[in-house]
Length: 609
Image (cartoon, rainbow, N blue to C red; front, side, top):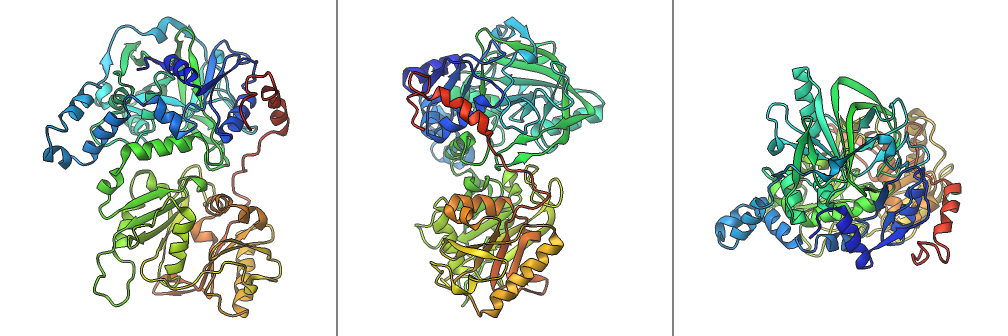
């Protein structure tokens, strides 16, 4: 049982899950580049013992594989699953109260513990003493990527009604005065945003504590979607097998087991530009005004270690976070949305842009024609639930084949395309919200959504090679098969939506002139059809991160009937638009510099890259 992050690091090293990097490494781009290369190779966790410009160590890739993540929590994993199962379905506890008595006692024994001893408060430091890690060349400065941001409800102070969330923290760059203030990236609907809104209405600053490090369960707790009544601190204690220990200094809550704590205040209406930042969609999130926190004090425990991760085009380390969350929460989504059998946020598409779902269809058992009905109700519930509401594309069907699995992405999409009626089964939501990090819409947080709801008997055989009708289409060239029923063509460079409408209209007319094309329901327009067709992952990423349904979906023989849009063949314009954020591209000089760590005799010589 770990007491802190150091215990975890030593345990991982003992069992061959961690490598120490002895050489001096630059926190400007080098540390992130090393992490990305080792993660891609399926390599170990990394302890950077010699960080240029800082006396503190740093660790990354702790959660780089699901196997290592489960190893870290091997002694408490089962009890956590049991508690979550009861929380998700309280009726289970009533059916077998004696079996679940231990589960209830486990949750009670994990309650936060207030204590006086705080190792982290033994030394006071400055922000500039930390490893100031910049991950991507265009990032606005150094960021903390695994923070635990703690706030309390101004109306009901105390740890019971607190919020612990993971909101990235910008330490340097832009207009931030080093050691004086830091930036917090979060939206007003998050837990911290609710607390800030209450503090603003009272006309008083919101006290914030940023915990970094501590037991790995504290990090995971900050991103967990927990059921009502189970606090992040209680969950942290449950997963750690050790109660979350805290105290107060100058009115700020302190995590006694943390490696670092930054305390400060957010004052009403005080913001500064935050970003750019290389983010999990595979692009930069751009510069926008976000709350700035005035730094009060910064603490570090003796021999503190700063944990970090690097986000970018999936899969990355946060993919393991997602898998962990899915395994721990289990069937929670089924309890929250009746009729749902399965929901999968597709990691290859950046998680939020694309959802695959299986629901129920019980409304039409006696109709001669099977068609989506209950599924549409379920789709509305999905798009109105928590972070699922950030999705742009939802593909949903009903459970008719037991073997159907949303995680088998190509098979699932093939099943949908074999059955979809493009004159009936597309449902748009326009002028609505979109993920803040997604720049495919027409403004920050503004965009659209579309539901593809397919149900019933197979309607078509899908093409398994490029149909002749999609060859020789003027300025649209190099048609390539992505998967059955999906063909990508390479179009001219996007200049404006006015020109795009003309271009796509001419493409539609060219296809229509060649006759019907029932075997290819989905046609993608891209900047590079060879890249997009190279792998399914490339197709999923480029198509669903680079398109806004209301603006970028076109169709062959498209028309409206009773306000419903229909077509014979779907066309998605997945070209890069002028308003899109730039994609993440590594610095070639840095890539060459870090090769020194992988040669014979160097720290990472045994990592197979």
